[in-house]
Image 1 (tube, helix red, strand yellow):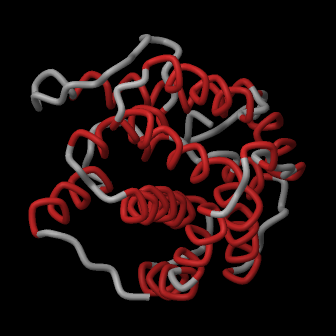
Image 2 (tube, rainbow, N blue to C red; image 1 turned 60 degrees about the vertical axis):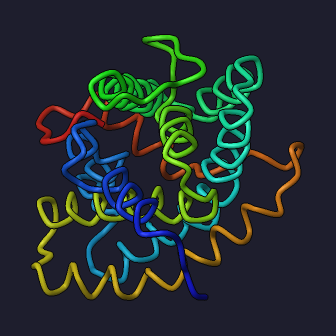
Length: 225
């Protein structure tokens, strides 16, 4: 699948998706740390299956469908619609840590909007999801929705693999091989998300939920979630 865009929008997409964007994504493992601690994940193959399941059953059914709706709402400056879908995002974060991570990253991204002269149509500190903030910034920078979805997925995947290099015996070469193996799944995830009806939004990833719950009480940990 070819991806084309203007140079300006491409640069903005790279900026928004960069691991150096100061939203704290590197400090959250999204349950991965607990899954490793519980010995659920031993090998590169285990990790690939764990991340692949989140792409197909989580991002394709929750994050991206909601991101697409919120980009459209932000373009129309529809604050009520943004508030509505923001509540959906938070409702789909089914543990305290996952919800806290979503809000913490959303707040961090919103703090960047004034110095970067980004005009967002709606925000509520302490309650704005990262998906919502990402959508509003993407809309302001006129990044095409499908491309914004790819950038969102890449940012998540890169952070997860980076976390794995600290938690597992996963070297830099193996990390790049894992990214290479999962990259072809990203366009399919975006395509699936773009066809989802409103009443089909939602997912069930019980292992992720259990890992997140266990991480809340994990004695020794490197990450905040």
